[in-house]
Image (cartoon, rainbow, N blue to C red):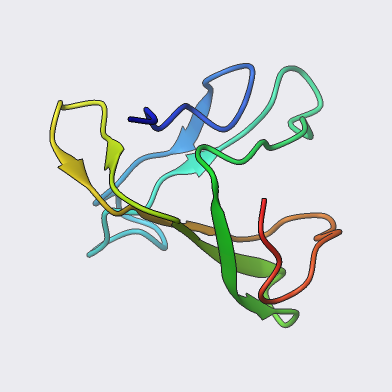
Length: 95
């Protein structure tokens, strides 16, 4: 079984969940890279692009099957990446 991996080489939280700004009522977190804040993002699991919206440079991806989450549970995972500088992949693409 595949384990979901963190999608960046460095973990730097720039805004946490349930903070006073845009995540006031959300589990969302913002991540930045090292120094410039613009690091590459990697797929955390094998999956499929489910939706791309260019208005916010956002991409939804879903695992092909159940994956092991960091807390040990096993389930299908969906991730949303938003504010990406570029999305070099298309809707429906498999990775």
